[in-house]
Image 1 (cartoon, rainbow, N blue to C red):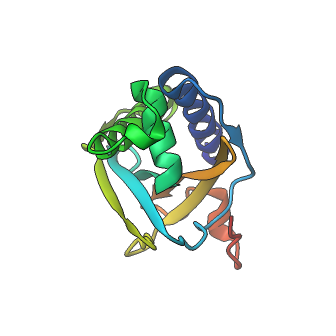
Image 2 (cartoon, rainbow, N blue to C red; image 1 turned 90 degrees about the horizontal axis):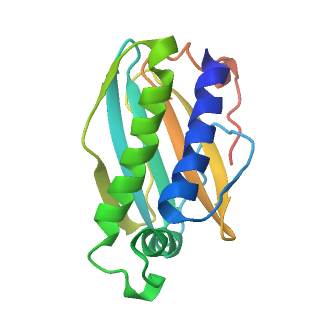
Length: 168
């Protein structure tokens, strides 16, 4: 089921971008850790619980987040101001919600939280406790963006057995 989870997460991310942002994204091979952030960025997170529990997160540079928000709202990236947190929260919510819906037949019902959005400089995410994480990188209009799946059961993802982390 682990490979299926990553395939579903990749597929729903592509679908959300095509229908909500009106732009395609190109999937890159999954990796184990987010690259170090440099400069301003944004991270949206949604927790889920049920037969599996964990977090789906979305990370992007501030520049690419403005382009995404602009695409969603029919605005130029320069016009996006106060709308940015809501747009990032909504893209995160759409990815996590679609992921939950498509996984329901195989993984059972999950509940999801409301999105949390953090905007700042040189952001990093650390997960406390035993977790397994896999990052799905994408290319959006020349920018790298990331969707991360974190499971609280570290045996659930194929990358959990590796000794060395593969950075994106």
